[in-house]
Length: 280
Image (cartoon, rainbow, N blue to C red; front, side, top):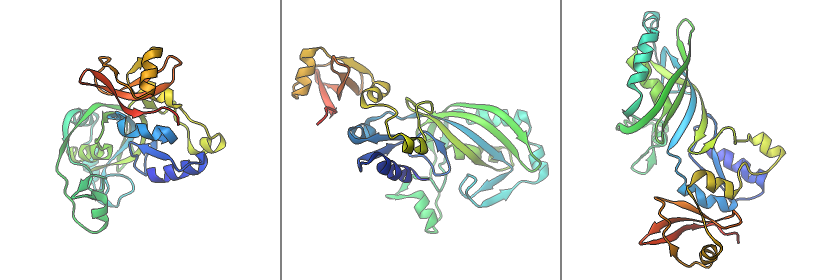
């Protein structure tokens, strides 16, 4: 399923057209996709989803056109090349792909070239070469290694910055080891502050259409929190200025009853509403 497919089904389940998503998930992947329902769609463009965690299975021994298992095979390594993929070389290759690196996105990625997605250009028969860009791989931890004749499979945890392609890590690791590589499976376990533990499957949502997090809990999880007294909360409700609160970036303003009133940011000595979240 594409992220758009998930939104379409959620709209039907929740009985509203007002559903959006943040942090697109590739169709071959499973795991966390953040959805906003009704008023929470206002939050989606303000979420700091710049750190993500994945459980990945990397296959060494062949490369593909898409750098994952859904593409056509480009190269297959000779048995001798696969035999040379030792644990020590794997560890060295992973270390070289950890930290601040320059990564060339997959040709079939959603990166835009002159306003058109790279994958759309590839499907139209164009040859696409994307420039490298800086990304950060905070963790690339090997969990297990399986050797199965013509390939070596690795299970790993990858924690990375937004814009990092795990399938490009598989491609680059395989290339560095002289065997070729691609991504066999991917599961996203966290997107920013949102985790798999809080997520629900579409089937679970079908059985019980309710939110994983209400608006108050979602803002409290995703943004710094500032609690207002009754007078300040009243001022915010009436669109009046209140003094700056001293929090860097965007933060949530909460009324004394615990309900979120708005997202705000300090500007020129005042706390100014960025998004008003008061119920209609």
